[in-house]
Image (cartoon, rainbow, N blue to C red; front, side, top):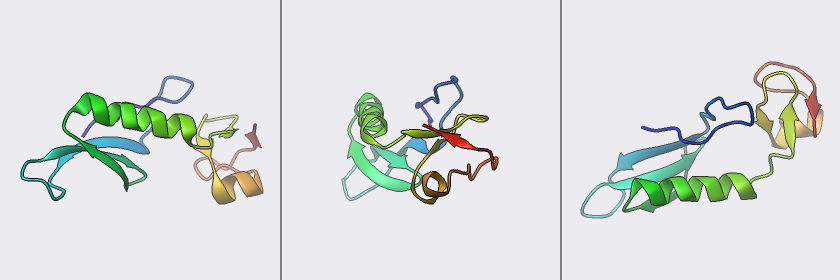
Length: 91
């Protein structure tokens, strides 16, 4: 498993992963995932990483924790509190 996507502070964004998986093709493919959710599968690792980068750029990371830098969405953004450390959220 690789975790190629980084937060603004340079730390690894563990929500994004690429794994070799059997997913309906005769050979294993590089599967891109966000929070364990399937994004896409690719013949090359480079293509899978590009899919993750595209997803991150289109994903709403407009809210982030001012303390840990975690990108937040959904209820976290709605209630302005980080699920990771409990701090205030800023956009």
